[in-house]
Length: 189
Image (cartoon, rainbow, N blue to C red):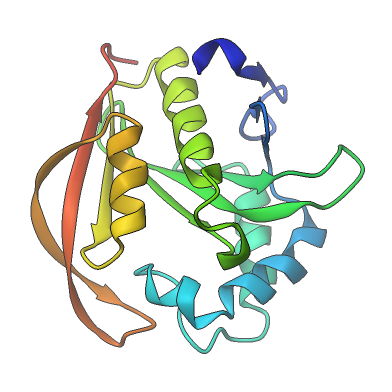
């Protein structure tokens, strides 16, 4: 798949744009907030993540987009987009949160209408390839145990199981068991 991926630098203003056969991973724009709010308000999306509350508060998507648009030493956020350059075909979001050294944690969600289409796998594989090409050493992921679709996405992308954990799920308002995964990318940054 890496042969099909094209990246475009955005001159240090944010993440690179990553183009795959069916998707364009691009920086968030203010107009993405409406679709993010719509999709994140769906209980099914919130339930499968630890960080999205349910009900989804008014203004939360606007604040998320504003933070994502700031130059950050910690987060790299892409819109998962299937639209043409002048359209808003936002389907979900993928984020890398920088950890210690040259490692990051990957988080992602996709609107339910696009579940089971392979688009989440395509987006995650594209970010893995981008991280490898830009010198990251490893990506980590933590997935709620009953999110079996996300487990498949991670293992298809080359992540290996490393153990179990527990996180506070905002939508579930409880501690939830998780699986942890790691993908060694082959070199340091």
